[in-house]
Image (cartoon, rainbow, N blue to C red; front, side, top):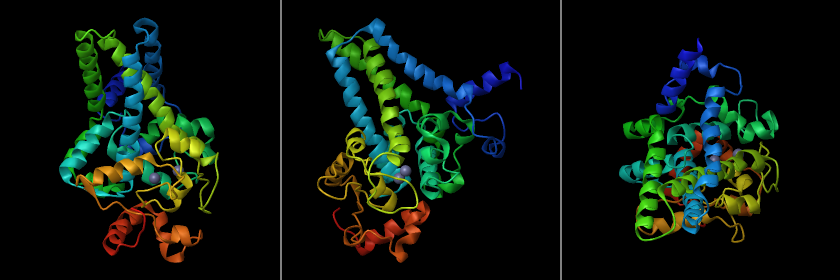
Length: 339
Ligand SMILES: [Zn+2]
Ligand SMILES: [Zn+2]
């Protein structure tokens, strides 16, 4: 394929996440390798941070970046992970759509692709097919390399049928770029409004800090769970993978650092199993459940406290599809505590 044609396909792929130059089966059969065209968006994101040289530092812009880091980390953990990937709670179809839209502002691709990749991770944790296992593929590949490989970009809709049946979710998954357009527009408006009130900022300063700096930190914070949370920390449960619990990672990811707990009990909304295992995402989801917008949060199974062996009758929970179904059944029987 000549370079002009390659460039054209790369451009269309940036706008339409379901577009590939070759049939999906061919893309999936490709070897794991860094694809230069897929690196462009990462380069733009990171180089965009250098914009602070021109736009400078402003208190409002810095605090906006910090706030957007934590708000969107909550979107990643509370929406993409604990809802779309594991269905650890329920909501209405309309709120589900709004949550998917909010998730696209995290610039981590669409909700269905995220859920598909994540369920695949649980199904093959730290085995050769696991796209981002530091044990199998090395630390840097698990942190950032894997997402630059074309092979890992198609969404396998057949593996997430419970989500793919909603056309509005498929649309958002395909055109996830909408999240970036929305966030950039809101930041430009926010900068202009503050400036009109005499605040020393500008639309461009807001965009550099609120989009580029905040999103770069958000990416690396999230990626730490793929890389570090399978290497550093303690193991409470003897899971088949190398997942770890880490207090520090739990702080920067709003609770996702209790990754060994999560790999053992992926259906629980709560990932910090004890009061000292800080899990901000769970506290926020619990508070939102009081409004009635979400419901049926799944508690920590009693067996998590009684013994730390894997009971035979729960072995199927290691399969994420089975976990989604089992979690729905468990909610009806009330076989959990702490939610
Ligand atoms: Zn993991
Ligand atoms: Zn998970």
